Length: 397
Image (cartoon, rainbow, N blue to C red; front, top):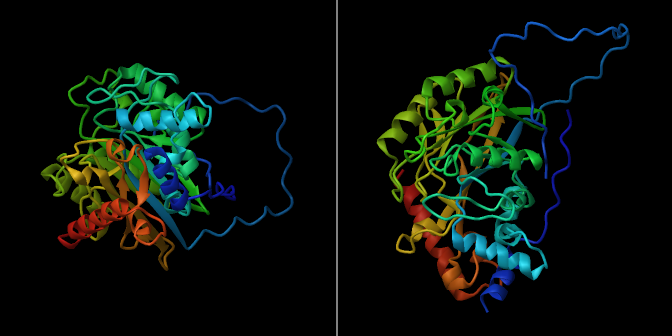
């Protein structure tokens, strides 16, 4: 199975900054089916025309890559100022539906250059034309998925405390929006069969399984128990074991948990991450939910990213770190025995511009803001603050 060509890269940071100033005045991979442990169907269709015996040797399978890179983004949290920016960007192009592509263009290089890129959509999606809803019960424009795809994301995790903000109907609508765009997803499910089907990517011959689970749903009822993947460590390990047993090379688990606005992992995070990392079937663990960056640590011999912060949001201006995040870069390298292990993750500090201050929401690469010519001094200060904050958090790990 040969990977399809990656989506073409477009203008990046310079164009994003230019668009911000103006406002203020792919490698798509098929999903590999992994057999579940459910009983086989009682009957299968018969074939009245059996295939003739194959006499020629089949072509050799392509060699697996010896290493792959994965980019992981933080919470995609669509507040009012975020979708209003996308609406203004769409209006400039004569379009009606919110356009999120300019918002994310400043980090496109960091996302699209990875062999596999995974985002985390925290909010359910509305019908195409709305109505859109803000905190505490979200409903986001489905065109945000088009922006994520254009940025280079190959799939998203979806299990979060807001998964059922719009009930089971909103959950199904969100799943359908992903499916219509052929954007991979896991964590919330429209049918029991979907809930039993693991998500596995083919990345240059290396298969990568992904599990997504959340601590809860803010007290809102999950009317279909299988529709939201709640934290269950034994079940997650069993799923990881089944994937490895069926030939999956790497299994990652995304955990939506923690204390909001805290850089220190919660007791629940620590317990869950350590239990997962101890398992020989879990190769990497990472997290969302606190809306600020948390440490990157090696636990139980396995690298983990406790919290990526926000990818995009408009939260408390009194908590500046909610406007700072990281894109984590994880390289998996093949061992002599053919298995894969994660090297120490690196990261790109990011900043989110407050539309009340800058006139538009933009997600920008903080490091490049300090080196790109023509960047306004206010953005340089914003970038320097993000870099200093992220480095100090990682230095304490």
